[in-house]
Image (cartoon, rainbow, N blue to C red; front, side):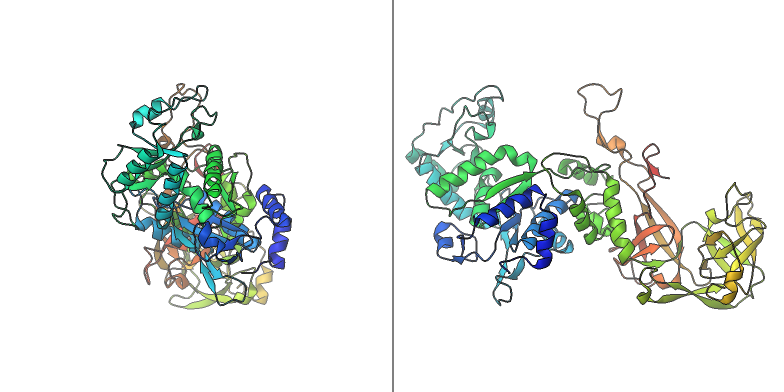
Length: 615
């Protein structure tokens, strides 16, 4: 790991120096705030770290998810921010699982989070110093620090900064006070350190049922910030833990565990969202008390808050996402309509699109609502460059070229990527019968319509110019086939092609060679920008059911015809279907020779707020 950012990283930092978090980091680096920190190579208390070498990382950040669910779009912003800052400033970013709640955490979520961070393009592994053979793997679990957390709690008891409270949860809530009224001291607040220590050790041995006692910090029950009114730091939980099994029957509260985790890992800048701003005074109080006792090295981690991601047309509340999954409004956590990272990946959103989006929205201290179209634009921008082009007919209508020899075929050639000529061209078989889009023919054309209608000429893209001579209807009166004649000297790429000037340009696929496939047309899951928000006429004080705003047209499944080159695609291969948008071969349902495609995003933003669907 380099102690100095590369010239590329330095230029990024310079451009983004208006970001208030970058400004803080740059000021710390200029002041040499962290240069004396020591690092033993693993998390640990001061005695362990001070025996180590100078920390080779100029800064340390962390992404600390709780493994109780799947990551969503908001987590992607945090991942890009924390890992990106570490990369840009010659630092390291830790992936740490805040697994302090055994009743809600599962290994499934741990695995999915690891996979999501890797998919976004980030790693917690690398050399300690650039060019060094010694590497550092910064993958950690809060549960691995439980011994230290207990020891720190016992120090707080012995130093008079914590006590065991035997009130019920209801009694504690009643005595906490309000924003305008001070709280009341617990009758157990003056419990001696010896008695509290005895009770805490017995709590660890499992002598008491859940809720019988709780360990609280002794700070100030009259504090203006309610979070400083003797907050709970350890509770009894007789529950098996996914990492530590049945070893523990006391578990730390998140607000107690998190700052300790940061300090043990030598985190310099602990970046979190604004809802934790009120917890910062306790974060600082706790670390100061432990540093005073020589348990943590200075300088201590600094908590920095930024506004969380708020996007139109989605919900990011874990409770609401669980509702959508459990009530089967979606097919699962990886449903392409759900704003989870597993869902986004299955939909075909590229990881680079999330990185670009995170850069575009930036970070600030004020909440704002970001238009979903900005996210889609970032995905389009990345896919426009990355995705090769192919042809698909989603609403097929047969075109018969009556003067083309029956039973014969030839090859037309289409570029794989018009912006990348080095990718070459692919052959598209051309024959007497073709599939075209139904919207490319009108029996009675409207004004300004330039595609096929009786007597009109149009070009079959990459092929010939044809003239419509008639059409067939089925028994219900629906047009079932269009008849044309082609001009043999009009083939694209030949000298004769320039002799024909037509306005219509149609996509097509040979009926004989076409590949039939399931195509899923995904759209926004909700039909309104703010699901669940009050509307005019709603009764005051009644929360609107966000599920009432679900978009009934968020998914349509159709059978489409694809050009033959798509028959053998691999899962997660993405393409631009010309005219229709960007599509990806489903990572789960696509099989060899039987692809299933998901629409990732349309070619342009055509969302109608009034209609609640694509125009």
